[in-house]
Image (cartoon, rainbow, N blue to C red; front, side, top):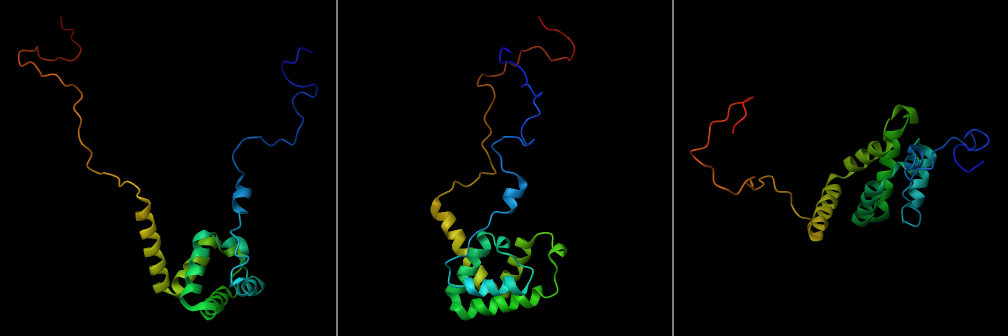
Length: 163
């Protein structure tokens, strides 16, 4: 046993999972963006209790929209949004919706389009403040060769060598 090759059990030890750096799909799906400590946590708890929605269905964009709704109208606006969402989710089973994050966000966005538009404009202004460079569609053409072409050069004929 010089330490090379497979272990004594033929390389069959372990649980069969790779030890790569990437996250599994399950781990990515289970990522929850917490709404704990926010003023509307109790309203969302009622939503979870009375519908098929779950805390993992709210991504950062949805939480940002909930914050914008709260800032626009306080607890009353959030409670109205949750009641509206609960009505829209009535009778909807979890297996019937392929992407709950998009589904809930679409309903929240439709609840108050003005708040959504204001939030979207604010996010756009924040991106502009970061100063990301704009992509240029009209790139400058850089010549491959910087030398002049000779008018007396031999004509190019494919498959023929030139001397």
